[in-house]
Image 1: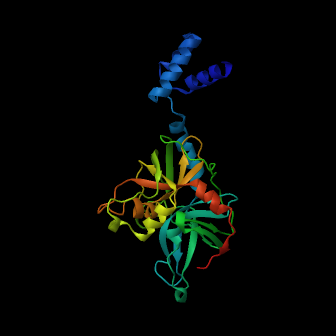
Image 2: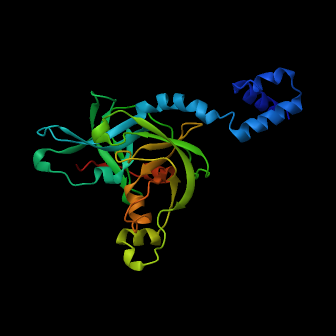
Image 3: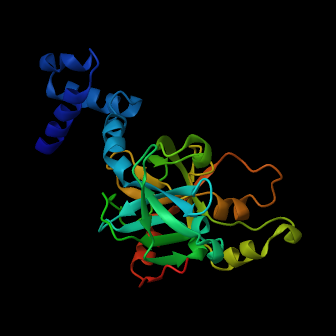
Amino acid sequence: MYQFTQDANAILAQSGSAVMKMKLNMTQSSRFLLCAVALLTGTWRADAQNLPELITKLKPSVVALAIYNPTAAPRLKLLGSGFVVPPGNQIVTNYHVISAPLTSSQNESYVVLSGHGQQPKLHQILSKRVAPQYDMAVLEIAETLPAARLASADYVAEGTELAFTGYPITGVLGLYPATHGALLSAVTPVAIPADNSQTISAATLRQLRDPFLIYQLDGTAYPGNSGSMLYRQDTGEVVGVINMVLVKSSREAILSDPSGISYAIPVRHLHQLLSQQPTGAQQ
């Protein structure tokens, strides 16, 4: 009871409404009642209050992926988003972002860009770990950057308030991180059986044989957001990696006009990938 009283008083103290400021004249039972009302109606929301602070804290961990060509103009072709994980020299992104073959005769290579705006810093990729089945890649660079904190491998509960930060429409909007709020709408299979077997692709068949769960979000992700960190609004812990290509090619393959629904791969698959040994960069 004592702990509940302390929690109730803390909630009341953080509320800015005039009604909550009347707590000095309330009985203990009245405080409990107003505390419950605040939680149920959304008058008090710790996640909303924490988000601006979290964005400031997490933005240094946001990076971009690009193709570097020293003879081209421009020299950098922006591809998508990524983020830094402990110990600070590991970069997470989607596998499809860095999977296309490059032209070795033109000295093309995939690179990581840290910093924002017009003067990003370029980092060569020393090694990589990939999991194409989950469309994930972990890249190693030489320098240590600020790292985001990963959540545990447990699935997040539906209804959790999340956010993701990355570079939407990277080639147009440039290296200026943008944040989108997202409710976790569903924890759902990556692929579902189709009514007509002729509409099932080979990739979907493989996913149906070995299905796994993904996060369905009500926030809108854009091209360039692939590889963005998906994190909790209350703690800032990363719970998933934004992904559009893998999921939309399976769940929405039969749609002529794909939906605006966004998806993410749960962080449990990232934990698995981080436990593997890296290989050469093989640019």
